[in-house]
Image 1 (cartoon, protein in one colour):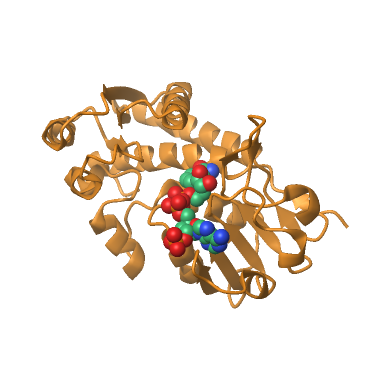
Image 2 (cartoon, rainbow, N blue to C red):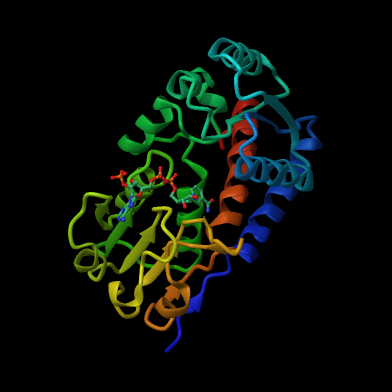
Length: 286
Ligand code: NAP
């Protein structure tokens, strides 16, 4: 039997619609959430992501500002502009588009973003909050995946969740969020041996690796929920996830497509986080 496909595009549209409604409620009180996006260099994928984020802001009535710098911008210049944004009352969220050019000190730059405006959840204070189960900003991609799982009412307590990838922006926070929901979590990475033996035990399998079609049908437990975070550009210009969708959908119970799965949820959760930052700045509980 073929898996049910989780429609990330539709779910993201409904999340965006509720953000839009809440933005209008705030507008009546004279508050307009604002997001600043910083980009350095001309990485084509990053430029597309930034454009999509700015368009999403516009659609829901969130004010946005783009600060674009050349690839040879200095740490001091970026840090200075982030400090300015930290003080700017019209800006509630600050996003530094990654990857930054290698010449820059990314850790220092991310640490400059005020934790209260860190809508990407990359500041150590927010990472610490996630690790210890306290309120903070959660990285948008794993937060988007959790929304999808919640929408599907997928039971997680006591289930085995396997996360492929251990990056700071996807794999690790993903694993922590699944752990918060009482899943038994295994994290795999490039040094893990016999990946298939581990993935075959997964009730929930999240692939965040960046290798096209790495996960094949023989690696998946029948009926499992398979979430594909990967975005890979194939030689013919098309996009593919980390999961071999055509074969895996025949064995999984639930599956996300690429495109149209996790990607739209990431942007929707960025809007959710920006709205929350604006509410917190206005002294509301959010
Ligand atoms: P990343 O920083 O490159 O991390 C990749 C992870 O995969 C690393 O932990 C790496 O292990 C592991 N890995 C590499 N080869 C492996 C293999 N053969 N078997 C098992 N693990 C392996 O990437 P990322 O930023 O987490 O992103 C992962 C993917 O998600 C990319 O395709 C990216 O484009 C996509 N992405 C999508 C969204 C979205 O909104 N849809 C958002 C963010 C990222 P080591 O740690 O040992 O090197």
